[in-house]
Length: 350
Ligand SMILES: Cc1ncc(COP(=O)(O)O)c(C=O)c1O
Image (spheres, rainbow, N blue to C red):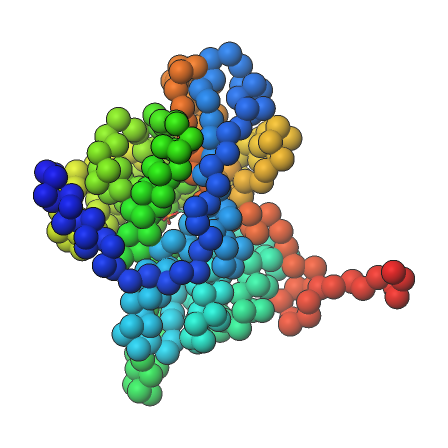
């Protein structure tokens, strides 16, 4: 990619419309007490707080949906349909942003492999946001259910947008290309360089955007390490490559499509705790007073901690852990999903 390509890409990037719903720049903080707990050779560890992006309790989906929903609005969509698991962060943030846009939101949510005994807080919030929920038994049924709902609504003359899983399409990944620009400016102001970026990866849009952004900004010295929340390294990196190709088409450049995905930290599967992910949640809470989510970021952090313990970094390295949000998955609704708020009152006392 030469300088002319980069200038052209920058111009195209700036011309893509987006919503301004997120709060940026999200903070970058150092985690010195975590480092101290990990021994002498631990690298310096920083965290990018994308759990603070804003709508729907924040997280990485805000950056993607600002682009995808801007396009939907421009196309005249009245209804947005998307899918995920019962605790899906993507679905909740979509529902929040649709509420703000006045769009009808339909969510196709699959049941978990091990049923929840309580109602996930995220599901309760989806309902509070006015989303219409269709529950299906497995991940495999989501796409066909979305297509069937869309077809029916289009038959009724409605304008519908179907947003694929995780908004992980090239337009969504553009949000993370912009996030790299944002982070690069922050790091320059802090007089810092990062050697590694660790983040959770699943549907691939976040990683594709991060990889594209780093290539555009010539930050090849940095290694972007995605830690899988569910699927094999081969399948996620293939997904990232496909999205990267699409980002390249949007920006008129060609990217190196290789991506590093670690798949040894998700344990028995999506959303199922591992001893290491639980330990990571405790360690971050107790050393730094911050919360990881059990489905994504705890497993990504477990990967980073394992690399540190294996001595894969030197004390001179700087690592940026990208917090992609999701903490609502730690909580369940007090009164189930029956329209009650779950408030317990205070007995009339002040
Ligand atoms: C909290 C959180 N972190 C990470 C991810 C993974 O991001 P992506 O789907 O873009 O790979 C997701 C969504 O899947 C998420 O909700």
